[in-house]
Length: 344
Ligand SMILES: Cc1cc2nc3c(=O)[nH]c(=O)nc-3n(C[C@H](O)[C@H](O)[C@H](O)COP(=O)(O)O)c2cc1C
Image 1 (tube, rainbow, N blue to C red):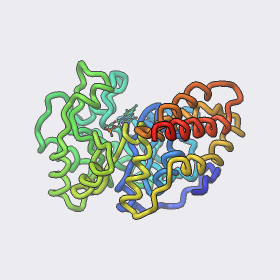
Image 2: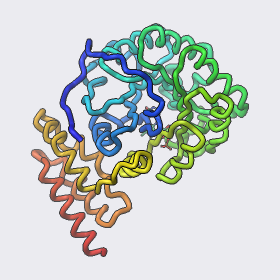
Image 3: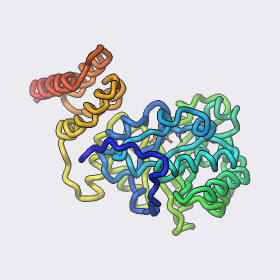
């Protein structure tokens, strides 16, 4: 796939219609992980997937370094910016900036449980404030043409009432939300770290299924614990889309295999895909980026494969050295081949 180097700038904002087909495979927003280089790699693996940025607070969008926070490569689209915040006017302003930068969707974070986020009164604690979230959604919808969507949990702490969850979603849809991503577990705001909050509260996919069943017109994307092509395919029979987070990062080839299973596209070998990423990598190196900022996202490409350990090792040890370039990746591939041959 061709990697364009065009940065979409303010003013270049063709209206992009919302296509349900485009949400069947989504890659989750993940702080520190789904930066632009990670997304460019995921795009190569899954040409039709919908990609999400890391969460960016509305204030940062408005006052921060926009090139650093919002810049992306045209190849990443369709691309959603995930916003954090709970002030309607600020979110509307940030959404407008996102639309002007060419983003295809703005997603509001109602699922992050970190202490910092709670102190700022956004993220998962917003599940308890459906009216405030609706004001935020309505303000963003009024400000931009691109779809506004919400990513939420089932509830917080001991909440366990499907009707309350469904009412939260309905309120956001009434305010104009075009789609909901359901991370299908509660967030426990006291006593669990964000990492534990992705593992300990039990998954309850049934609530997402029921939401979809009762509201056939509402696009519902299911998130949480989906790690294989088979699991994703099974979920796609019940909801409109799946969103993969950790599995997409640690075993990115699953994105390629899932897209191939969905579209009939021919599977390309890992090595071929990586080689196709070379023009992107070299263009970034040419701009002065250190190789390690890209290779850290590639470490899982041979996950579970013979030689995968060697691949990771060569890249981890070599990428931080000054002047590291494509030759290191060639070396990693060579070691992978040799280890795989020995294992055969
Ligand atoms: C390192 C990391 C960072 C995350 N950052 C965000 C974030 O910025 N916004 C968000 O909505 N969710 C964030 N999440 C949660 C994921 O989007 C997703 O909901 C969660 O990992 C469950 O999906 P999974 O089981 O497929 O990983 C993060 C998850 C991880 C592992």
